Image (cartoon, rainbow, N blue to C red):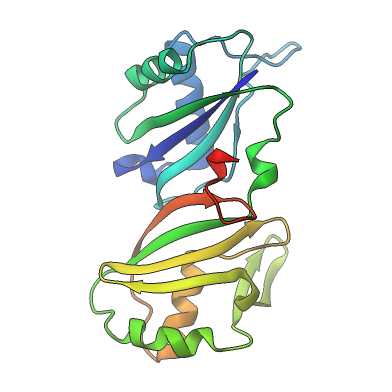
Length: 217
């Protein structure tokens, strides 16, 4: 069996990278004396998997981690133990016990919902959203391991709604394409003819192909 863990990553913890997040979770699972499954071989390690890495500096409100278990444990006990040893900024919000053959969360991931909060004057941006979305193509420069290339953001932008406190965006997050909030805000700022503002980005939740919460799949 395995435990699906929905957790938040906030405060100063949003500035740690994915490898440091893995180490923090591994340490908490060991300190919490939880019955986790280790790999076989000369260098056993905890077998954790995350639905999607979170960029450094981005707040995560409902991130997903899966933890293989060697024996059954009550969900309430698991939740209490891991939260008692997690550092400030990391907190398990919900856990869900699943059979080993339940599809991995990563396999069902399709999109993510973000709140993008520009800092400073961003008044010109909301009024330009309707025309921005009418475009058939939104070219942008994508960075890859082999260099930079032009790509189209429009097929990966599923929704963009102005809110009082920022912009709510639903962006692709799957093998066929991934859109990043920083690429979206740059494209929108360029379209509006304004300087790209610094932004506070929060990943609100991960979504499956039905645009339903991934943790409930």
